[in-house]
Structure formats: C-alpha cells, structure tokens
Length: 268
Image (cartoon, rainbow, N blue to C red):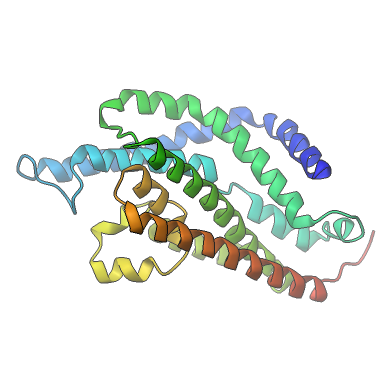
C-alpha cells in the first residue's frame, strides 16, 4: 500500500499545478446547470400553485440538480480514460509490466488524487452557488440517510472508475477509442440521471434503465440524499450498486488479462 500512497501524493502534487484550470472548469460547469434550473422554473411557472412533476415540487427539483453537482464533483472521471488509452497506444504501460506494481491500482491512486484536488477547488464556486440557492437545498432526513448517501457515493466513484477503465482498455484492440468513449458518455449522461431524474420517466422505462449500472453513478445517491429511496428499497439499491462494483471489477480484470496477452510494444 505504501507505493500507492506515494503515487497518490505525487498525483496530488502534479494535480495542484492545474488547480486554476479546475477552478474555471468547475465555474464553467455551473453555466449549463443554471440554464437547466431556469428551464425547470419555466416549466413549473406554467403549472397551478402546488403542482409537481412526478412528485417533485420546484424546490425538490432544484435540490436534485444541486446534489447531482456535488456527487459529480466527488466521483466524475476527468481524463483518466483518455490517459489510460494513450498509455496503451504509446506503449507506456510496458514499464509497469516489468515492475512490482499494478497499473490499474496506479491509475486508481491518480484518480483519487485528482478527485481530491478537484473537489476542494470546486467547493469554492459550487459552495457559493449552493449558498445562493440554499432555500431550495434539502438536507438528509437523518444521520443514517447521510451515512447511506456517503456509502453510495463511494460505490458510485468506484463504478465510475471501473467503467472508464473498461472503455479505455479497448485500446488493446482498436487504434482510436474516442468513438466508444463518446457513445458511452452520451448514454451515461441520460441513464445516470444527470439530465433529469429517472423517476419522471414512464415506470416501465425506468425499470429497464435500473437494470444497468448507470443509475447508480448519480441518480441513486441523489435519491438517497433526498429521501426518495428508503427502507427495503434503500438496502436493495445499495446491494445492487455493490454487486455492480464487484461484477465490474471482475470484468475489468478479465479485459485487462485478455488485453495484456494481446499487447505488444516495440522500442525502448
């Protein structure tokens, strides 16, 4: 573990170089969020007083997007998938294959360091944004709800990293993985609940999407925070989320093993 802690600390130092970039990126991310909130305000303005959308009052809908922003800051993969694909394409992973270090664990340490710095820097613009909309921000109903939310966010981060790695490892077989990454991102953006809460969809469509891992990247943690998932549904959701992490990890290891057997690099 010591060597991965060292990688994490090195990653912290390297990432600090780009702290201003992170600040501007976090601030720029609030622009589409503001547009989304104004859009929903317009939707609710056309309804009678007290009307809701799929059980969401206006304040609850705004709170949903605010918590989405927080979870996204904690868990989103920045450029890890592109960097992994580049390492494979350029042959840089060769150095890890002859050393007592796991390349995937090395990348995970860098992912954690990047998330740590980005989250701290993003708290400045995001914190100000939350402060101005604080009257709409719902808090967890109990300490247990907050604990379940925290656990769900940790599992969501693991799942984010695993999915990103699996997309990147396609570089063992194809020269350019950008198309696959963009397609996966587009589907994730909708199916994870980033664009809208999944429970405003028809029930049958929501149930189909819930069979995939994507709702457990954003929608499920946010639903836990808002108290829309409780009791047996909460326990079941956490178990499914954990199961997807385990299945994803095993699949990632299988893809890595197959890719390494196929991998070849020329040069030094």
